[in-house]
Length: 235
Image (cartoon, rainbow, N blue to C red):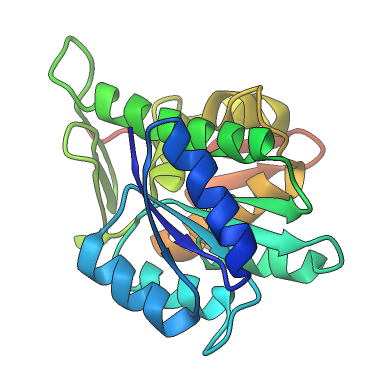
């Protein structure tokens, strides 16, 4: 099972979440404010971070920004129902998924399980086997086996979800993928995510790869349909 960093300032809720996750086999370390979250994430490098938005010290959005500057650990963000803007900003900063309060422990466990499955899938795809282990394009190189990406010769740090999305698109250059297909393939059909989730991840990928959704961009928007990877493989 996974090592999970739980960041939640409501101590009763944190205790409940910690107990429920430990009952299914996870190892959970809980902290209660923003500075402690960043320190614990850098010290432990957990498999997954469950992060509330509203925190003392500094909020979960700032925690996400600071963690993303050093590591790609998956982040599941907890938001209040009235905080729609925080969901969008959280995804843009690098959160992998979000869950709206109030939520059931069963839904929380399902979201965590889905993120961990994506990580295991990426690890499995990285194992030596009879598939392409490297994808090379002009100005972009994807090391499938090593889970590494370089754009214009410079390393690019991607989250597990971003890498899975880029790998799927780049493995099929020129093919148009609908948002629905991308959601099912990358996030799985057992978790409720939305079109805006895809759009936020695509925007973040473009920014990291140096694109702007302009002519010549690696990831093109096909209006009314979805997205396609526009570059051709290098010979």
